Length: 309
Ligand code: MG
Ligand code: MG
Image 1 (tube, rainbow, N blue to C red):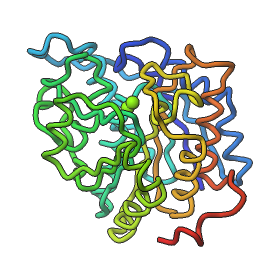
Image 2: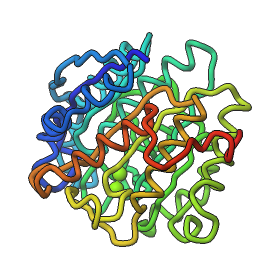
Image 3: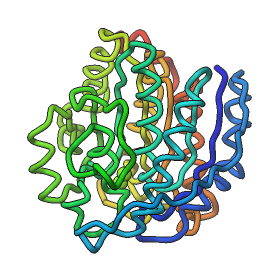
């Protein structure tokens, strides 16, 4: 695989400072080296830093850094579109707002190629607020609503060229949803596998269902991994910790199954806040999970025969 790394020092989508150090932490924790050890070629494109867009103030006065975030989306959409021409883009965040741009860019590419774009959203949160419904004002709570083409972003966020069909979005790990998001998401075809379903059925059964769907459509699959998908006990370096997250084994099993599927075509690593980390522990955890997605086995045998698609 030809991996392309892009550093996205974005933190204006979150309420806490520190995410801008994320790309540097991934480099320090040896992300490129881990991929090279697995036989992949890696090019690091450096960091991106788009300028703000001149958009009007929104009636919802709590929204934070609207112009700056709009600029990031525009810049990232273009970067992701260009990076997805060939090779495997890995977006090193930065807060989760970045997915508004990365998904918009890669889905534009998929549309041009005549293929369906799918998204696996690994997160404690659904990030399905609109500009109207956000009550924290932190725009990292909005990317899924934006890239699936929900109403209310027109004139503020860049025009979306290729919305992802809500039916092609699968969320796993969800355990913190605001009432407005819950109501809005119920009206879509987004698949939400919350932690209760993970407990009841196990991640493998849930993921297999989704991967089968992606494979049948010959789709492209983007994985968006929020640090807070993981339990805070194994990944403390995130500003939005929620107890009861995915365990080490569940997370690695997902990554190994994704590798075995051969379906993943791009990846976001988001919300790592190195300022909150413990001696680089969370950064290393995220690098190890990425390595599993790219072929490293943590468990004692490959899952391919036990979980055929
Ligand atoms: Mg998130
Ligand atoms: Mg989250």
